[in-house]
Image 1 (cartoon, rainbow, N blue to C red):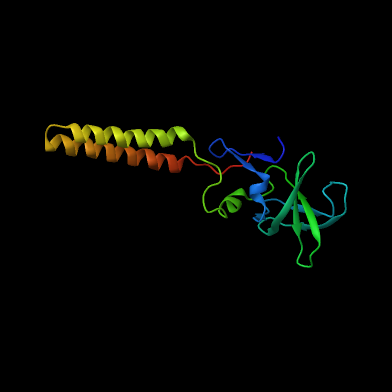
Image 2: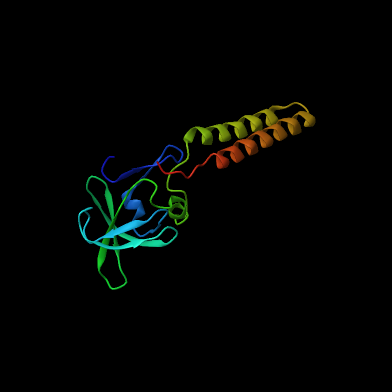
Length: 157
């Protein structure tokens, strides 16, 4: 894993650790809260599945990424980034837009389908042909857009 990069199987993209700062992490499995970013450091508590671990204040890169979080009393704790421990659907829901860009090829395919259908409709000799090509273009681009949205997956590792 390169410095600060988290690998995702979401449209083949990556999310940086910096993008997770100021976002709330939710536990999918029990999460140990450590005093320092080290597995040997004191365990201050354990967040149970389904509960909020807390808002990410910062992060530290060691052999893995450690999320730095703050308790209500102002003290800090660390949780280790491990596969399958956090609910990434809840994390991604906190972004205004999906932080991972979709595959560009599908964008190009949708736009080219619309443009091709528009060109064919504009150059058609009869009004029937114009409606035919316009309809085909609308149906094809609509189908491609629906497939694009359906194929966005929110799986981690």
